[in-house]
Length: 372
Ligand code: NAD
Image 1 (tube, rainbow, N blue to C red):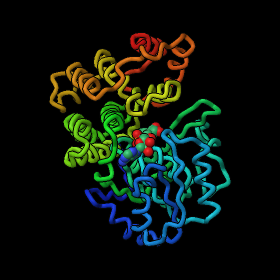
Image 2 (cartoon, rainbow, N blue to C red; image 1 turned 90 degrees about the horizontal axis):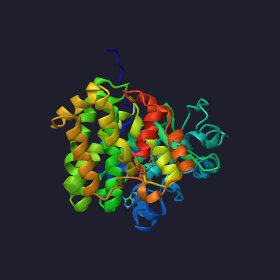
Image 3 (tube, rainbow, N blue to C red; image 1 turned 45 degrees about the vertical axis):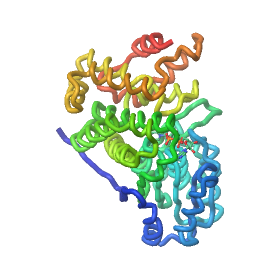
């Protein structure tokens, strides 16, 4: 088996490590920075703390990033970078903030708009400003990936873009930043972690370094998510979920995600289901589907995680979905035939081809019909 592994992001992990921001900005020789964040972090005073830690080197704040960021938000952020000739970016937030910042630091050095690249397959320029990413959710691991997911509502798409230039320079992963994540968001982001790990393990592009990380991350998520959901102030559970998140990110960024993530995009886009919850909607279906179609890696993964077989792993995850208040089916949406068809067609995302067992249109139809 031939494989390659690359990971260019410097990762600083640990409680209280946001204090390292000062020295990391100095290492970049940053003097004219932009903080990308959300209104919530401004309101809770965390943005002010970051400005203080930056010692006056952050001169601008862009806090208008919404969940599932849009191409317009990315373009607005890029304009600030361009107009102020910024030399670095600090991204403080969940995957939405970090994704928006990653694309903006590239497009901000050009006159291009994000929509020119999203879903078009056009080559993304490589030049970019350095980013220090500070994740505040244990979920996407955007701080260590070369992916940026944006939405273009005019074209009705939400899609990932991949570019080596999207890798942040530094990721400061401070689990204390996740203490304020409310229970439902803890669960949705936690299922994103679990899906990253499982899909990385069975992806057709799997390789041993990433698979090892995937098992580690899946084990941590399976044993800590319930506790982090029920007791958000349990720092040990938060720390374990943060470790699961970042190691799952390292696990999936090269093999890429597969079927559950492919289906999550239309589930979010058409029905507004939160990203991780949308991934959780189909992950146990695909565990069973892959196992029933002879995929040995799913059984192998179940064994490595201490389960008798793939069915036992799927049952355990279904139990965790139930206990954490995740949607279990699509009945409450009362989908009509047009919406059902949109879900099926939207799920034929390129990442679906990374699933170890080919998934046909009929397979998708049967899956969604069983959920409505
Ligand atoms: P998010 O960034 O969309 O945040 C969700 C909500 O939680 C927001 O309102 C945010 O302000 C709030 N929030 C974030 N941190 C908080 C905290 N510590 N305390 C209180 N509130 C907080 O959520 P997410 O799940 O981290 O990111 C989802 C986005 O990332 C989606 O667009 C998804 O498609 C994308 N994604 C990206 C990658 C990647 O590799 N780049 C991978 C998976 C998903």
